[in-house]
Image (tube, rainbow, N blue to C red; front, side, top):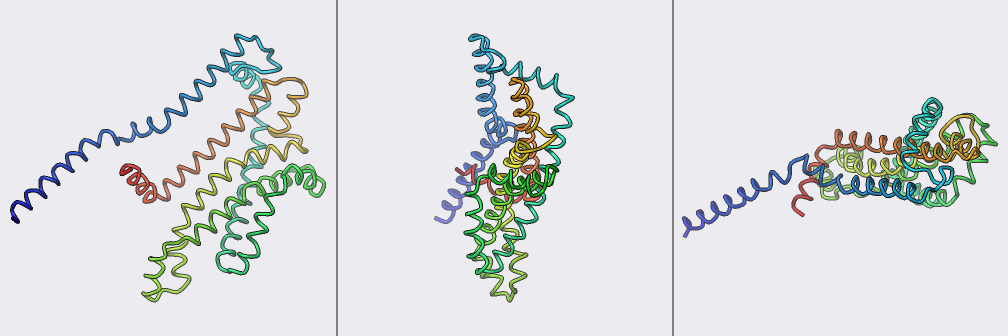
Length: 288
């Protein structure tokens, strides 16, 4: 009986290994990337083609709705103007995002170390998101002038909430088994924080950062709409007043491209810092 059981076990192992070998070609990285990114790229390309063909067939005026090709041409022709405006928006975005990181992480740590402060600050954080940014931006212009500071504050206000909430929640949902194990081994609160809770909260932090970074460029543009002398927001306003709709769309495209590039940079940084996390996720998806 034991011999038969061993033979059956070895046969099952061989079958599973053969199945695994058959799955290897399907799990190759290029094929995964193709399966993941091909559908949205095809959809976007189809929409642009439909847009181009639709504007060509209907002969809609360029000042009302330019075609994608007209937007590209307008962006190339206005590249000398778009360059300085883009750089100004990027400076405001980076400074505001850096400020939101400092303030957001500090608030998350404070809320984690004190339950009283968490109960006190959390409702205020939620209430702060009910105030429209467009209502605060004029006040910031009045208080701090037309320089770069009001735009930086607008970006920070837009970005800090997802960073605070995601990091604080990540610290709270640490693995209870690991925490209990370290406590049984005599670890103090500081050791548990740095060995279990902080590493476990890093994926949540990056999730909040990816949300914040997609809003950061938009926050800078909103700040420029209210009052600025340079930036993509003021470029859009000047272009729209002159009915240069193709340039407005070109500025919108630059804003989207900047947000996508920054988002991809955060994803690459996350993969470099958390290879174990992504390896586990890929294993789980393969099993599913």
